[in-house]
Length: 142
Length: 66
Image (cartoon, rainbow over all chains, first blue to last red; front, top):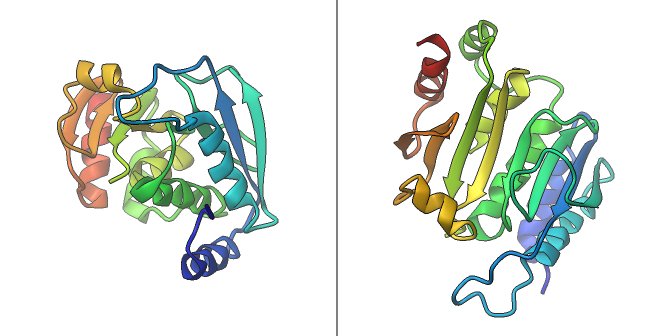
């Protein structure tokens, strides 16, 4: 099954065409997760890799690397979004599918910007932070 | 989710993770996730739902200045 409908693919390809810099997607595989009720035969790790490769096919600036249990991951499967190959702490844990495919695409678009899309007032406030903050956002694909 | 990613990209002190709640039910249960998006900072649940950028920044940075 293709990753996108034809018209959606055109829109995503156009959006990715605006990237200012390369973005690498590091797909992290780990020990097999306990199968979820109703999940059938879905291989979440393989599907996550397919999603990452599907995005990379739409832009020469998006690349994919796959590793088994790399450092810096709390659970699997996962995708790290690396602007210019640098780990700045962007993660997607789980299979980015359905509505949440948009979150991964959004992460790639943000990581591919040379300049932040935050408002100047927000950037000014962030400049005063000198304490580690880990933001976890729980999401669902529907 | 995008606001969290934007903050992480803008500050070396901030990391941002999306966690698919149905794939990690034990973790979601431990943080009493009943609605999404649920925002958790440094392991402590903060709020549910989308908010404007200024509110998001205020709420995320609150623990850093307590």
